[in-house]
Image (tube, helix red, strand yellow):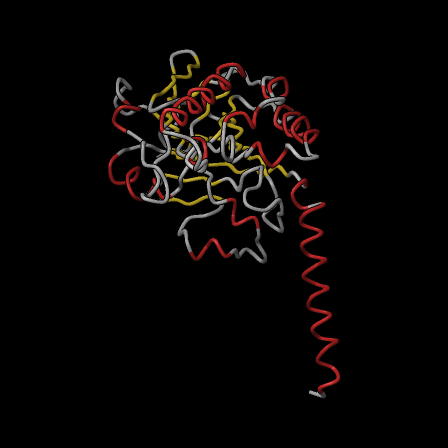
Length: 294
């Protein structure tokens, strides 16, 4: 290669990088999409055939505070427009602390579904990344985050469950606190406590923020049919179905199955670290449950 061409190649590469980052910053992180999937279960109660769950995850309120507040209203409208039976939020409502939610109360209170809005905690929701807080301040911040969700009218499941009924049929929505791999991520999930009192053989949908929980504990220790997770953001970058995050997580986006049991991972709706998304567009997910014959 003639050496006088080298500077032009470098300039072209730098221009491509700059254009890509600018696109991800100005457009990609606001390109909200709806992804739909249908999952078949032989043991789904007949009354729940066609039941639709709206999953959204990794809101990261801080991402919307600087010039993007109108996007929160757009997200809420997009979710409500899907007219799902239940809304499930799978953690990381904030990035650092609860007061990131200040000013978003009216919008997030507008999320509505016939069977309610259910939520769980993600690793960022425990005020672990504010190095200036004492343990007492951290616990107070966690309590404040709980209060925000109560104010929104959400049903925050802290190693607990809720039963949804259709006539004589029912399903159970189970929610655990974040269960990641220490020391990087908190492990507060308690599957036994969360399922205590549920009927044997009940159809269960688990909300668990960290998808590694599925293979580590959910599959070997429970009979839970469907797990909904987030956490990975699909790396906020995906091209031709590949993301760098795939080198860290075995399951990192979309649907995975094992012996008829499913894990669904949402790419999330917000951003963390940098306000850029490319390919891994911010999404909400509509999951339709169907009954299949054994």
